[in-house]
Image 1 (tube, rainbow, N blue to C red):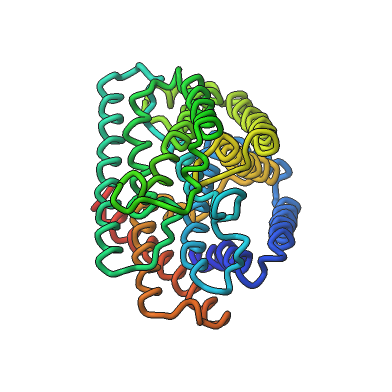
Image 2 (cartoon, helix red, strand yellow):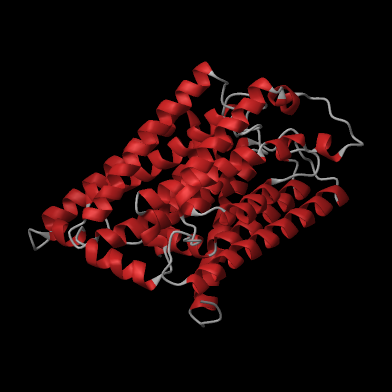
Length: 416
């Protein structure tokens, strides 16, 4: 029953906001917020104890972890919706990825996964409590990078073998998102957290300088490519790597500076420190305040760079894009924090729990399902009603899969 309620209240509005009701997305957002506020107020007034809000907001540390879970799961869920919806005429073209400069809704996807990986990373290179455990986490990150690289290779082979439709302007002829994320996850752990901020800032500046002064922006945006040259065939994916690595480093720096790493750390000493010092919420509210400030600074930099240096471009992952992605994600986190603390919410959303637990498996299944839909249906000629039904059914299957995995794997202790 929780899954059905969450699906109706979270995903149905999300699907409508990028299809039929895309012109009224903000209206839907504020309507859902208003309903949530009214529901909380009624619950507060009906509560037998007058201090129910204070009781619910006492566990501020738990609220932070819940927000992080919601942040990652909602990113996954809306990605699943968009990667299928974009194949139908029902999906507004203004929300699709921009060709060269400018941004659409889907331009936020790749960068947001880079930021989410950095914010929720357990590399913890700033922690010296257990050097052996730290080396194990770095090795685990590199193993994940190798797995992503292998998946990227399989994707190339599969798409070429089946002549699957591709837009080479996104990453190139062979390059794909999996290889970009694998590169970042392989290189980033080599850089200690304490130098992530200067390293990220210097790399951003150098990358932007090369784009504007060395002609790399013209190269990456040029439609022509030499088909006998692997670099030329994949210039979009290769030339954007520096920008995505800089984004990951800056995000890791924010996680360490704001104290977010304490809540994602697997180090027992760090966890106990968080528990003792967050009793009155000082550390948590410091983190929330820094999140709001960092979001505002990122917006200022993104808008300034877009206006004065070079327009935002996901294709080259330039400086304006880096700070636009940071600003968008930190604003999202700030909004979630203020909503949860303002309404006194500290419960877990079941759909977010199961998607967050099986994010990788559901992401892979979603990609396979999108391919299956495209092979079995002429998406370009599908009616709006047909498209909407397919998207809803597809998302329902993904959520049901996560629900099944949770109960039949976790409950039977087949996985941790």
